[in-house]
Each structure stands twice: as C-alpha cells, then as structure tokens.
Image 1: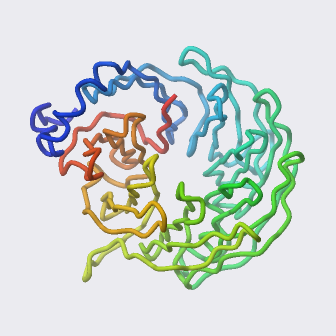
Image 2 (image 1 turned 30 degrees about the vertical axis):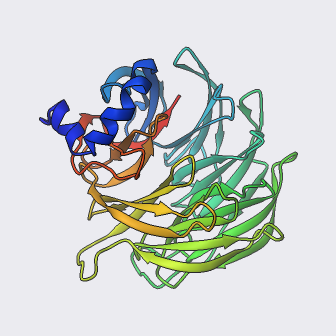
Length: 376
C-alpha cells in the first residue's frame, strides 16, 4: 500500500462532506468479495473490500483461467462469465469464453466455449440474462451464446468484421473491442476500433441470434472503444481510444440508431505524447460520468444532466499508476477503484457523494496485471 495516511486520504476527498455523511453507512456495511480479472496465468483473483477503511485484502486465486480481460455477472449474481484472451482453445485459433457458479464468494467452473477468433477481450450479458456476447480484438470478430442455468451453448452466431481506418499501426484491420445492449434489450452493439464503426444488430433474446441493423460511423481515426448507456434511456457515450474524444450520442428506440450530439475532448489543449482513452463509469443516479485515459493516466470526472445526458467537467485525477485499464465505483459509491494494468496496482480514491468529485490522492494495493474489477 502506498505511504498515504488514512487521515490524509480522506482530507483530499472533501473530508468535511464525507465525515458528516459517511460514518453510518460505513458502520452498517460489511466486507465484500471482489473478483479481478488478471492478465496472468492465474486469471481470476479474489479480494475482500472494506468500505469503512477502503482496505483491499488478497483472498487467493478464485479460478485459474489464463489472461482474463473481462468479467461480468448474471442479473442475480449467481453466475460469472469471463473473457480469456488466449491464442487457442480446444485446438482452435480462438479465445475462450467461460462461466462459473458463484456461492459464498467462491467460483466453480460450469462451462467453456470457443469465441469467434483470437484476442477475446470483452463479454457482455443482455438484460434477460439469456444471451452473452463476446468481442475479439485481434480477430476482429464477435459471437453470441445462449445461457441455461449458467452454462454457455456453443456459439449461436458469429461475425467476422472487415474494414480498416487511417491509423496505420492500429487500424490495419477490424478490431472488435466491446459489446453492449440497448436499454430495451432489442439491439446489440459492437464497437469496432479498427474500422471506426459501432455495428448495430437486432437481438432475438430467445435464440441469441443477431441481425444487422445498421452502424454508427465515428470520425476517421477515432477508434471507438466502448459504449455505455446513461440511465435516462436515450443518451450513450462512446469513448474513442485513438483520438481521446468522447462522442455523446442520442439513441433511437425506434431503430436502435445512434446520432452524434457533441464531442468532448479528454485532453487539455496543447497536450502532447501518446494518449489512449479507455473506459467509462456512470453513477447509479446518472448524475456523474467518468472517463479514463491511458498514457496520460487520469480519470476525468463530469457532472451529467440526468434528463439530457449533457456533461459539465469537474476535473481530472491521476489514476494512481500506469495504464488504467478498467475502473469502477464501489457499491456505496463513496470510492473509486482503478485497475492500473502496467503498474500491477489497484488504486482507491475517495469520492464526494454530493459533487461526484474524486480525491486528488489515493492509496494503492498490489494486484498482478489487473484488467477488470467486479464486486460480488
């Protein structure tokens, strides 16, 4: 853990506000199991989180699954699904998609299937809990799976995308990076960083089959990486990795289309050097939205208009390490946890629940190559 005292840690996060409101909540809270996807042979690591002290304690290997890039829960949190970015599985040149039962903070393997291609970096579960999508960065592909009692079927649908963009070393071919579902669960989306597109599909949740329904074309060289829907049900944020710009989008319930409303740069004017925007976190009430940026290594906090989704900047906070791959709010939303991949650290920052502002300083805990943080 970094040499930052508990007192200094809280002072940097609007301690007056926290002190007045946090104590009862913290007293009532109990330690909680956290699973972390790790880009190591161990794969899924277990930790215990104490929201009263912001302490993060290692609890061993939860499941040996090599090079885990992403984790997600079923709606009832009784099953966990993982994306394993391996070069081959079952004798085929694909990644692995796996499922586990969850009981007492422990994981038990249930099923494993081949993804559509190599570089499996993301999995997403639809709102019904019946359909899982995987996205393969290296192979530029996606697949869907039906789920029954936590077990994955073989791939029901696959798509190998084509296309490229103007950034020669990053967009020489399609790179499917992220899967998501519309608020009404009628549409599925695959962010394709390589071709500057978000592919849109109609979803049949009963069969897990997808049908092409259009696309959103980002600016050339943007590299759309992730897509997150605001709780208002009509706003979405697409974070563009290569340009470090966020596209604020309007979502159409009629046909699932996405329309650009505005673009928000994450870097300060005049910033130089390599920059890679990464991920998005939205508070439960929709009042705050946060974006992570790598190489410059910061979290950028915004206030959000809950009706329109419009964003007003609050400020940037250093990520606490190098290459923030993923970040989350804890269930109390009083702490932000950041997975700093290249530093092998999870960094914790206090959050002001009234303003959404993050502390300028935090404390860090060793975690080998953390890629994804998931609260049980």
